[in-house]
Image 1: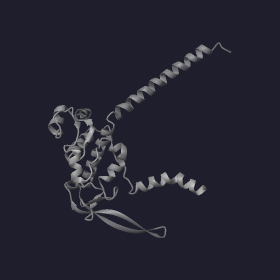
Image 2: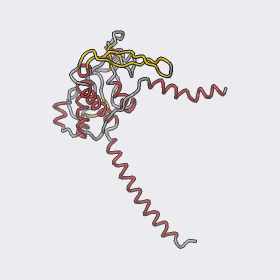
Image 3: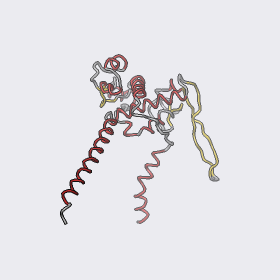
Image 4: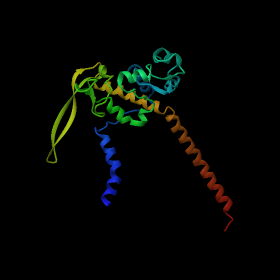
Length: 241
């Protein structure tokens, strides 16, 4: 009975560990970098919105990133007619389900669900796999149904098995090797992915930066009020014994 209780206690931790799988790289995002956020918006619209939307985000919110409504309309507004429209994908859920077997998920809160590090690593670990339907696979998300939409930028990678000795036993690891070059080198591609992830984090909570700023002001005001309240308390109770 005791062993069963211990097993139940640590079961969630075991599941969490098994989901981690491939080691995640830290995403070097910066919510205050407007240039990065603008570049991420461009990548999202040009490469992701063919299948994925962000239906809880409106195009005119991109003015928070330093863009004008005219810039949004001329460069980013491909799936709607008005700047105030939501960033919905062009194809319907019924069509996408018929083509892919399942409708591609909306990415409005994907960064909050998966985390920035997961997205950053995932988009950099696709490799060619002839055994899959799409011809692609991923180290972070094995047997993923999504093809590598950024492969023309990154190039094509292949999976290589590496064996090494650790603690007197053989350990098998996997790394990616280059099959063909893309239009960007490694640094440029990592920057593109960083910008895209930065934008997806922003989409998940557009008010995050202002919320933190307001929170700091509120705490400062509360600190001043605490000092005044404490001084008033001492003055009020000074003659009470």
